[in-house]
Picture 1 (cartoon, rainbow, N blue to C red):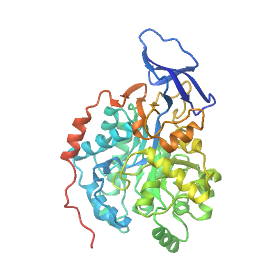
Picture 2 (picture 1 turned 135 degrees about the horizontal axis):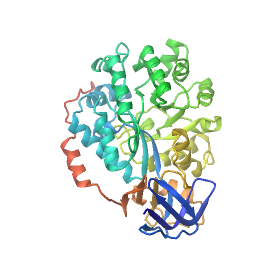
Picture 3 (picture 1 turned 60 degrees about the vertical axis):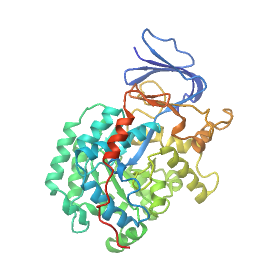
Picture 4 (picture 1 turned 180 degrees about the vertical axis):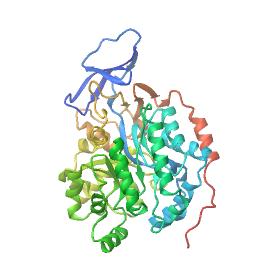
Length: 439
């Protein structure tokens, strides 16, 4: 007994190409893909006639613990935004607020067709983050934030000592090992928030247990310049010297890179997590992902957080990513197919998971798009990738399947009470007692 998707226009992002056909799902995997597949006894049939079937989208960088800080820190410079509003908000989470915040974020991701996300967890309640993902049906890579360098980054003073942070990380690694849908990731907040000795421990732990590292670097121009002036290298080169760059490293932003750092990223196998909306909103700049791609650097795309985006709408972010590169390099800078690949096949390859393509043995993480909407009506015979990239939105997401389980059908959550999630979220919207920046 499984699921059989019939008569869809399949965008496989694999050697199978694009064709009208069927997909058979057994358990959490795709069993077969063909022009026509006969149903087995007990199969649940999904009629995808006239619709697009493609791999679920992979969200490359998000802070689910910030979802309820949406609109809470507007029109601020990044340092004030982070240290006077967002960090105090994160540190103030209790069980209920984290539960409500993350469930709201996970629901928004799923509604937009995201089936996998790489999250930078909070300072506490990591269990709640994973529980929300498992319950709602999102494949999630996440971990508690690590930061101990309080001499440089003041908020670190409010965190447990480094030994306690590493003990927490080890406990979580074992607790969520082989759990359905979720996997623990080491999350040093950013380069200078973590002491060199802690970076050494993080690298050792990553190597010992083959754990991914998710961090942030080279986001703000002034900080990048000060760092180079003080240390004589860029942040990426510094991470390289710390031994923190390899194929299990994922670095958000990378807006301001020195010329030599492109080669360092390529040779290390680390992936860049490009967040165009938040980089523009916080006036960080525009990462040159065209140059990164041409150099051979792995690139993924992310929304960052609702506190600096203000939407967890990956469709908006991938469209913006393409348009920004056109404005920077010309109209033919990056193809629509390539950009969509950055949130499907290429992203799955970067994460090292069997996903992102429609072919046998891959995870059954799929979405069905209905393009018969006001903003997406157009000829299917033309460039279907461009039609989807530049016109689609969460409104086009008809069905979401994660690990062979229908999460959304006909635009409605199958087993999740959205009204309850909204009520919980409203109850936990933050008050205005967080430190205010000086006028």
